[in-house]
Each structure stands twice: as C-alpha cells, then as structure tokens.
Length: 140
Length: 140
Length: 140
Image (tube, rainbow over all chains, first blue to last red; front, side, top):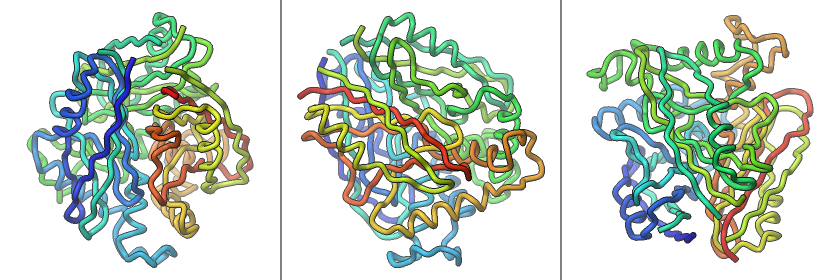
C-alpha cells in the first residue's frame, strides 16, 4: 500500500467553472497506483468543487446562471459584507456544493463516468490562485 | 491492509430516491474488512447520492417535492436544452447533492446512524441504469 | 499503514453552526499519522457537516439566515410533519450540505486552508447530542 500527495494551484479569472480533469488524471498516472482511492480537497471557502458534465459547455453557463438566482448579490439582510458584495454569496455557494470529493481508482485511472469532469467552481469575481490538494492511497 | 472494488448497476424508473443500503452492507460483509473506509461514487451527472432518513417514506416524497421548487422544469433562461427539458434541471440537482460519500467501517459494518439509508437520487424522468462504484480499504 | 477511529459527541443548543476544528486536529495529533486521509462522518439526517470560514462569526449568522429562506418552516405541501415543523426542513438542509468530508493529512495535520474550520450544522431547534465519527488512515 502506498500514498502520494500533491497540490495544484488553479488560476481563476472570475466566477465560473474551471475544469482540471486532465491534471487529476496525470497525478494518478504519475503515482503508479492501479487500485486505490483518490481524494480532491479545496483549501478555500469562497470557491468549491463539482463533478459535472464536460461534453457541452452550455452546462457550465447554466450552472453559473442557476446559482446566481437563489444566491444573488445584494441580499440586504447579509451582515458579513466587509470583504465585498460577492464574498458572502461565495461562501453560501460553496456551502451548497463540495469542498472534498473522493473517487475510486481502478486499472490505474479514476472511475469518472464517460461525461464526467472535475471542476473548480470559482464564486469570487476577481482572479484568484486556488489550492487544490490531491491525495491517493492504493496498491500498484 | 486490503482493498476491494465493486460496481452496482441500479435500475431507476424515473425521478425519485432509490435506497440501496442493503447492497452496500452486503458488499462490506463480503469484503471481510473489520475497520476501514467505504467510499460510494456515482458515475453520472444527472443523478446523485444522498444519505437520508429511511424510517418514513414521506421524507422521500418531500425531498422530491422540495428540489422541484428551486429547480423546476421550464426555466426559460437555460441554454443547455438539447437533451430534453429535464436534463439541465437534473445536472443542477446533482450539483446541489453528492457524487461521492465516504463512510467509516467499524466492527465490519459502515457506521450508518440508526435512521440513515443511502439513496441513488434519480433526477431524469426516464428509466436509467446507473453505475455506482463501491470501494473499501481497511484491515480484517 | 495504520488506522484509527473515534466518535465525538457534539452537544448542540438549537439551530446553528458548531465549530469542532480543534477536536479534529487533536484526533489527528493523537493518532501520530504524518501522511494520510482523514474522514469526518455525521450519523444523523437532520444535521450536517460544513467546512466554512472561521475568521468572522458573521459568516455563521448569514449561512443560518440563508438556509432559512429557500427552506423555511411552514411549507404547507410537506407530508412528513409528524416529528415537528422543523424536522423535514432539517432533512432538506442536510441534503443540501454534507454528511461526510474527507481531508488529506500532511506533516501530521489536516490540510485546512488558513480560514477553514469544520462545523456541525444543527438544523433542529431543540438541543441534541450529535455523533460524529472520525477515521484516519495513513503512515507515521
């Protein structure tokens, strides 16, 4: 049984879904684990993780469009406003999605479905460098 | 330390919550792991996973009723409409719930609470065969 | 490779976010694991887990304020009402957040970001004792 850990820094350019499936696949390939468990963890609370369809880019547009509806900017009852009007909505969107996702590894690859990709979901308007930790445990 | 992986195919019959707790318990029993970590992963983006109360079936009815409210069919601003009117709402509901869930295993069984069951949450209207991957790592 | 499991009982005093980051850090320190994977699992379906900002307490206030909006008490279409008016809304809020969270462990500590804390999100109005299971697997 062996383990490996790596940290990716994903540069975001404002609100949106940034796919990093290929970097995750590369990490698993480099670790030379045939059977195991991969965990993806984001070290922030104003962005989050999501596994979604990566066949049609319109899905990303609609996900962004959806979350802006129940969680708009300008909710006048918010009290945490010191970090800007997009900060508390970002925390709420992160609460509604994921901070960690674990994926079994079989035959040396994560068992993503045919249309699944892994995304960093940036909820802030300004560009950020986001740290995502990858951990794998398994057997060669 | 040992591992095992299996894939369940869950046949759904339209939108709803399909419990598969017993299949998960059986997998853990068959693997003969006393202490470990079980991970459940769904290979699709228009259905999802949920741990919920399995004592009263009305909870399932109300969960279905709830998600149809903020995520109805017919949102006229959606752009991803080529796969049918229930497809993009399905992706959104999947984003709001889980693609993977990990559960510690103690004394040879997952540590489900007394009223907890694990569900495949189907968000599409037509029947589908849904692949759920089970992974366990631990000691006898 | 080694494992450890422990169960925390968190006493809640009504709806709100109860941080237990220090107890999680202490568990990891006690287990003497340098590199590994920590999993946190809650054995209930009317409370949940959340990783959120722990720098400004106002974030907790606004998260509580947010979830009460799409999931208020008194939704007259609910059928699961036998356990009180706050029970089915609690199940829905749990469905929208997390039952399990996994965090890589590096250099003997979970890789929480600078502002991240782990919270038990209590959705019921009455005080409850909530069981949270901690599992770690890794190397010294």
